[in-house]
Length: 231
Image (cartoon, rainbow, N blue to C red):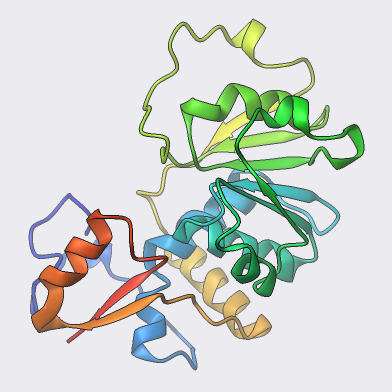
């Protein structure tokens, strides 16, 4: 329901039928199911609808330690892609490698100048947003695509953006807006999860009575991943 309707954290609520999707087959527990939702839908849409990801691609995920970033790494690696996970520090490099990252790099300087020519990706999932978007456009190989999905950098617009000058020749810029899921997409996601036996990543689990604690951890950025509240 996101911000469109009240009741997202209610024990019982009446949800518009347009916001409900049927899960036809899954072996996931309720806790794991709760970790799929918009997180995997956003990663899935970014990768396949906006980046047209193919098994032969080299994908770089910028903001890879976020829940969407982790999901994207997991999905892309199962597809057969070479996956580079970029993060501000190496605290989660072991986790990222365990879920399929081929390589992990520290994202503390412009990738457009720090990446060697042979290490430049064909696709970049940009989850930091406008703060690093221009750099990402210059870090991808010619003919590559950059998809801006996230705004983790807390900058929401590009100041004085000049498309002709800011987008290198032969590079493509796309975006993904996660407000329009369809039943077909949900079916495709769960078919993929079932086929590759993916385990949705859950960092912390709280009972409903401790939902305020869950919010505090979420707001302070100490969750380390997806938080699930059990009813």
